[in-house]
Length: 404
View 1 (cartoon, rainbow, N blue to C red):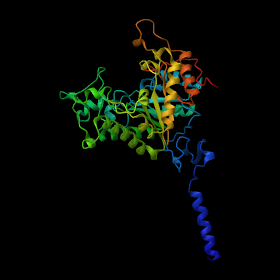
View 2: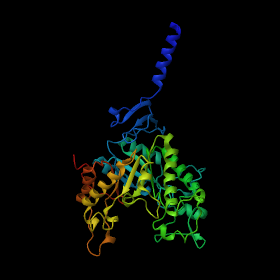
View 3: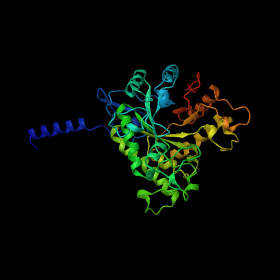
View 4: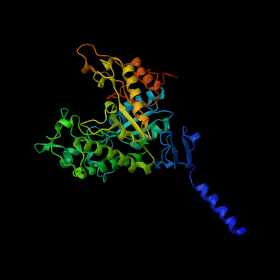
């Protein structure tokens, strides 16, 4: 090789090395790697996805957010995000160790919580709860509050009644449960695309994570399977039994959603029933804890003590929040440890009362009860959590890092 050729070869090699992102080393596994590539873009790898060799580019929404040391968040409805309660929630986070808001973008009825452009196919399902979502997110950016978009997927009365062929029907009419809620079918890939388009809209607004809720069939579906009218879509020729078909459809949706959002550089999380971790697979709703967990960045089990019947040897879980969450955490850790690439665990915990469980005085949830749940998580190595209160009225004075 001539001197001229050697110099060219060396120059080419140096340029190539500069262009290729570094591989993750063992020493780096427990660190978040961040590299600025643009004033509005970041690339990052986190310790729960070290098998990914190359960093991802964040979608440039014009806003910048930094992932917290550990997500400690609250649920926020569209009404609260667009109303006077928003400032109260900002102040709560400002004066505590909380750092995140999970905000409804597609709510439990199936409505968007803000008005998109008039030419958007989602304009007619939108409510004007959040009058200026970009302004809202700018406020969160200024305050250093991490924004997560909650999208309710298959519980969707709006879409079910607009497009009955995508729903479950009874005697030719759209079926609804005892609460008046209707669902659309996880078997229908048109429904997948419908929700993924909304998720991408949320990313473009500036949300850093998409959290899918109601990723399931209606509760008790195994009892209604033969009564309700619906089509199986691409699953009609499957040799799987009905239970496993439901599991396959739900798992496929989660996997598809993760793939569709990969290039946007956002995390994907799924809310799941806590009891799903205690069984191989739920017979009716189609949730397999391990399979869903293998396809997300974050798994958020709903482990409210009030929502458990006697379990883990606890006769009345609502009265023993520490013990309930402690026992669940041990089990979840065991289940997730068996996965090749376990997601980050970020459970939903209880900051509300459950009067329906009591004939007399209701167990009150205040500082002691909320802290007990967080302590139980932390003692089991689970450092992230989300607080649920349907009216977004959260207990004040809580130590959200009780082990520090």
